[in-house]
Length: 202
Image (tube, rainbow, N blue to C red; front, side, top):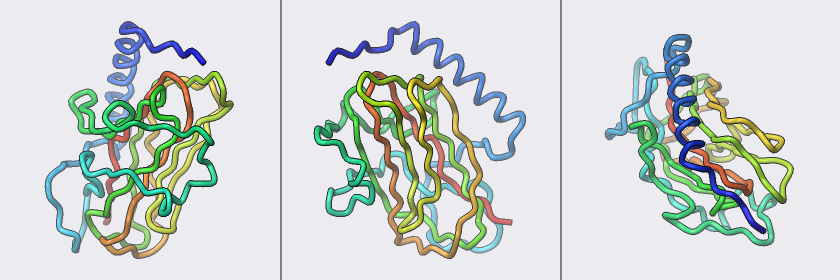
């Protein structure tokens, strides 16, 4: 199978599009400010505004025995570290990057950086470049906290570049020791960038 990598011009145009998307987001949505990557206490009281739940450098590969998405795992799953995934400064913002030209299936995890309360508002920002594939008809991404799938999206391929930025309710109290999972599966010359997972609390 031959795949064509995006040209430098394509990445430049996509970066311009992303910059415009983030600028418009900042004008129209209060959920757009990017969270700090500094340390956070797991026990928070009072109001919170975009308090970070993750550290972009702290993701680790989930062992197959603990992976909640194994039913989606292809026979020829491949995802080399550093080449297929890892920390990336994206438009000067910390992100966790998955390059699907090298990595067609991945689940990573880390421990929640703070406890959550029922009805806290979770803010997600996830950018993906134009998605294509020669041997698949859809791409799939998901966020799970413990046993709760907080967000997921199935995208028919091909798909245009886009910034996902939903605000989602937390279904119940969740302790800071809980594992949070980020999953992507699709194959093609494109990439995903997880930019934010944070919460707000009145």
